[in-house]
Image (tube, rainbow, N blue to C red; front, side, top):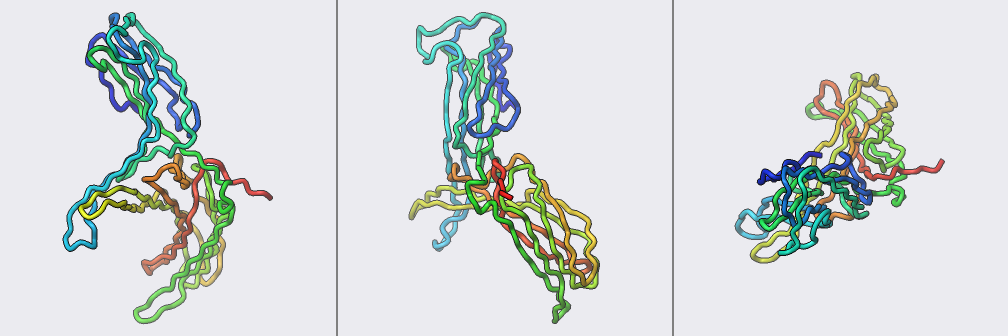
Length: 328
């Protein structure tokens, strides 16, 4: 959690530091920390304050309405403000003449504690949008802000997977691939994949059972597991004929793992594999953010030797913060 910016234009301020635990905070958790201000000489100030804020925004350049008989670039953007709080750690709540006080030379430590709102989306940085949280400590005088320091804050949205019964249901997905030889096709590979549930938390292992029917004359020696993401950015567009909302979708591979297998020709073989989810992850629920949403998909792929093709099976999964509890 690094410092974003430091502004100390006067020599009397030798240090201004924000200190709190370097961790990912769940929405609803409390941040405890301190602001350290060191002065070389006494300083005439209004106050020492702390600002805690969170906001999201999306932005990209798109094409004009496809129904028009001409094309031009349009600016697509949107934003959300989640919270904005300013606390006075020392001095006057308002900057006004007569409220100045002298802060002695030396080191001054100001404690703070703040409980995050329960309904916050996760921190996020993407190609066309961000959700950011930050803390900023600053001291003010008659000339304005004398010094300030800012640090980013990593927040994880909370989502109890047990609130949706579908997250407890097992996944079953299939795929089949034939092999083409010029003008005819011959049997290739069919695959049935099962997972005991469809809801997971960041860092959890997904246990995957693949039943592979190898109808070819070749050994199958490789299998890959991957998590793919689909991120949707939702923006407001102002055009000559009307104002409307537009979406931009970006797909990418979040994580991939390959494993060696031994599947003989013309046999059915069961393969047990696993893929550990990364952490932290953006939560699937996303009901607390109206401008960015994300979906995850688990994909299992087996390349067919000597034919430059592969068979892939996939199914959507959900990511939350409270693990699924399955009754035995």
